[in-house]
Amino acid sequence: MKAETQPDPAREPAIEFRHASYRLPDGRELLRDVNLTVGRGETLVLLGRSGAGKTTALKLINRLLDPSAGEVRVEGRSTLAWDPIALRRHVGYVIQETGLFPHFTVEQNISLVPRLERWPEERTRARVQELLALVGLDHAEFLKRYPHQLSGGQRQRVGVARALAADPPILLMDEPFGELDPLTRDEVQGEFQALQKRLGKTIVIVTHHVDEALLLATRIGLMDAGRLAASYSPKEFRAATDPVAAAYVAHIRMHEKSREDE
Amino acid sequence: MSLINFFLRHQGEIAEATLEHIWLVGAAMLLAIAIGVPLGVIVTRKPWLSKPILGSANIAETIPSLALFGFLLPVPWLGDRADRLAITALTLYALLPIIRNTAAGIAGVDPAVREAARGMGMTQRQILFQVELPLSLSTVLAGVRVATVLTIGIATIAAAVGAGGLGEFIFRGLAMVNDQLILAGAIPAAILALGADFILSVFERRLRPAR
Image (tube, rainbow over all chains, first blue to last red; front, side, top):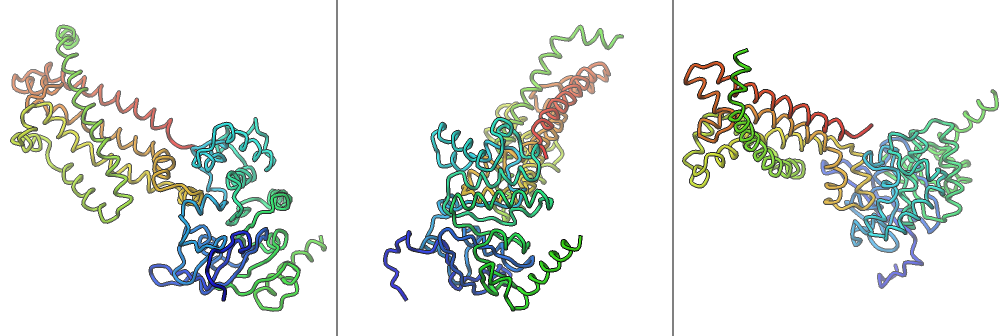
């Protein structure tokens, strides 16, 4: 065990779960003794069924929830030692498409965190323009639109742009492509993969889609009933023998086969 | 025919009473909004205060209006001036719909939107003023509309304590068994209520968040 003197943030892992548990006030345990390290620039995908504790784990990172036992460390500091507001502005957050503010235009949605951080107006405007280009939306066309005037895929892109606005080193994504139709989904995932390579951020994605995990992950954390069952590289995952991973792999095989049959 | 003549002959008085009426209702509504919206916010923030706040507002609502004006008469500062007393009573009546709708509007904000706001690092205060209140504006305004229509009606009773307004004609008409006088109070009051209802419903529709 290393002494806890002055952690050097640059050498610390971006995110670290140490025996982290989360229990509801009524005593139900949603997350049990999770140990996990996410290195800088890694993309961890938490994969598992509904109710496996994926979203709970994600919310422990930006302190939307506090662990009831153990700790979660972000850049070497326990989330409890962070000011929650500062932590959340340091960590981008993308939730399912419903999370855009319906009374804000695309511009206002994206510029939210810069405005909260009181950036000069010029810089904010330039940043919004840059981000729209980054996620492939035409600046002039979309700037003044409201979320209800966008398609699902466009909303998703705005959500990603909003989370990236203040250039946070860490990005959390909860079922980011969950409500898209399969074709749009493929498209947005592909774009995101390119973006991921360019930005080099530390990313944690929650999903129950195994193909998404294999496409985007540098590591896959398999969650089951509140526990981290195992953690694999995508390659190891395809060869894994534990029953949950094997079931997912069998599911992919079946799909690949039916695609070949067509 | 004779009614129209009656109105034309007394147009000055009727206009004056209508303005008094608008002043009573307007002042009461501004006070009720200033008190009711913060109370509605408190109801959503501190569940243990929700019963006492909504309960008291409910009780105020059930007191017969004539009796409420009577109860307030002996209260030291309030009883000194009739309009002061009338505005206080009307404010009490207007509170319940405003508190209830503010609380309902905030409770109706999409949880995903609130969560996104928290996740972006907005403070509780920023979430309230930039997200929750703007998104519940149309619901709050619906409460204001109900309260306004209600107080325009109740304000006619303010004449019983000498606060003036359109109730003057109604009480005088009742005493003199003069239908024309009663209508000189009732018709403008009804028009006021309908007009306020219409104008506020236009605003309410404009402010409704698009889906």
